[in-house]
Length: 284
Ligand code: GDP
Image (tube, rainbow, N blue to C red):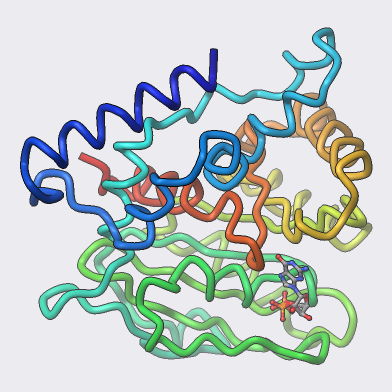
C-alpha cells in the first residue's frame, strides 16, 4: 500500500516534470531531491520515510504504536520544502552570530527553531546535513564532547532562523542550564525545539533533564533519533519502540511522531526539512 502510494507519487512527479519540460517555479526542488526521486522504491522509502521502512519489520500488532501518519507529507511537499533550504541570491543561508546569553542574542523577526541535545549526540552533524544544500555554510563539527558552548544562529533564507544550542552533559559549561533555560522560556519567536536522542543508547539521564525542561515550560518539542545508520535493525527497532512508548505515556508537549535520522546516509533528513518548513509556515 505504502509502496503503491510512493510509486504513484513518483509517477505523478515525473508526469509533472515531463509536462513542464522541467521542474517549474511552483514546484521547484533541489537537484539532490530530484535524484532521490529516481531511486528504486525500496531505497527511496528508506531514505525519505525511515519510520515507514522500520514499520515493515514490526509484528502487525505493534505497528499502530508508531505514529506514522501524523506528519505524512507527499513527495511533492517534501520536494517543495527543499527550496527553503537552497540558497539563492535573494535568500541567503548563512551563519549569523553566536551568543552566550539570551540578551546577547540577535533580535530576529523570523520564526525560529532550535536544536538541543547531549554532547556527541550528533547535533552539529545533523545541522550540517540539514543545511547541506548550502555547502558554503560552515557548521563546526566537534571532535571533543562539550565543544559547542554558545548558541549559534543561522539564517535560513528569508524563511526562518535555526539555532544550534550548546550540548549538555559531560563538560558542559556551568551556566549551560541558565543559558538554555532562559532561551527556551523567553525566546518569543521560538516555534519548535528539536531534542536529539542517540538511537544507539536511547534516552539517557541527561536527556531526561532536557525533556523535563521542555515539559515544565510547556514547549512544543520534537524528538529526533540520531545516527540510525549505526545500530543493527533489531536494536534500532527496540529503541524506537521504547522511545515511542515513552513519548506516548510520559510526555505532554512532545510531538507524537518520532523523527529518525542519519547524517551519514541522509535517511530522514528530507522529511525533517519538510517538517521544519511546515512548522515555520513556509510550506504553501
Ligand atoms: P555534537 O557534539 O552533538 O555536535 O555531535 P557531532 O555532530 O560532533 O557528532 C559526534 C560524533 O558522532 C562524531 O564523531 C560524528 O561523526 C558522529 N556522528 C554524528 N552523526 C552521525 C550519524 O548520523 N551516523 C554516524 N554513524 N555517526 C554520526
